[in-house]
Image (cartoon, rainbow, N blue to C red; front, side, top):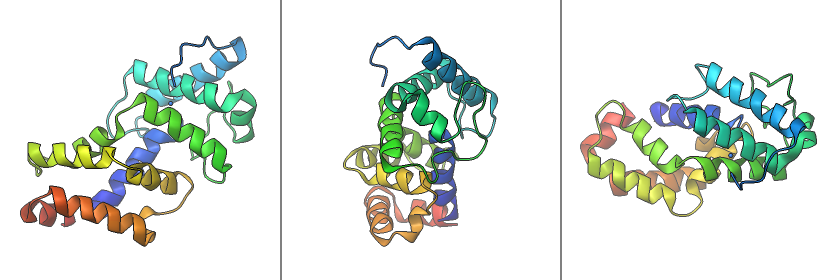
Length: 183
């Protein structure tokens, strides 16, 4: 279970400076903020459990700027001159968190990323990884797990989220795989 909680925390690191490539050109101020966020994402080795490509980082940064705006990001400490090392979305308004999550889900396949990270040590079969990715892409469970972590809560403290997550784990993993992950 600690490994799973750690994985959600790692995904939050990916989530906490990022998301809609609608094709709209950014203003100079917006581009400056987006560039600072991209630089932060690509330079911070702890930002993600797997390195993001420059395109992924750019998508996340530009989409976040488009959705939240320069002023909205400045309210939580993200500017062209400064991107906080800690989670700027902890304590942010619900609309900023939701906009950030929308942007993030637009840029990355988080269900696949989550399933792949769980399988990184080779303990899960390809079928199990596919099942997890499919199940996590349905509904809002993964979004709510990430949302709770972004706002500074532990998703495992929420009985409903844990129940939903455990149901998916039991449905997708063999008994041996469940034991390996719990270890």
